[in-house]
Image (cartoon, rainbow, N blue to C red; front, side, top):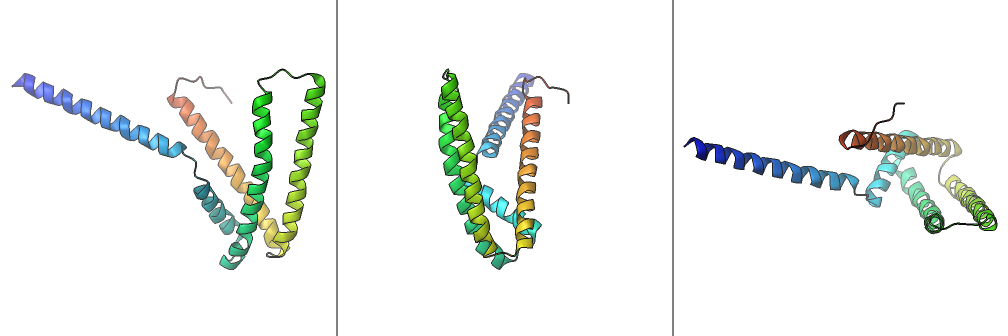
Length: 166
């Protein structure tokens, strides 16, 4: 009788442990999955609240905002691809100079886009609200970085990574 109870106990314990690991793994997978739609919804909500946009202002502003983000992402994507290829290659001085100049040109292109869209934004928002939006966007990015760093630090504590003192 005692052996049967012990076997059932071990079997139950093994089942609970397996189920717990499965759920933990599923949660980790969900947590790491990136959804652009979910990100944009959170960004919209955050900026709308912080900048105190009305629903009408938000509806007029965010299509332009996300359009600019998509254009910037497209420009940066090409550069990211080139960086990933280049970092595995030895480059001579001339190739490095060309690449550095290309990066500077990318920054200029992005600045031109931002200037163009600032004019579009000012057609749908008062300047003071646009300033609040810009501050809210920066605040959103800082908060996002902090959360990512916290998550990274927590992952390191749970893994076999050495912690560095700050």
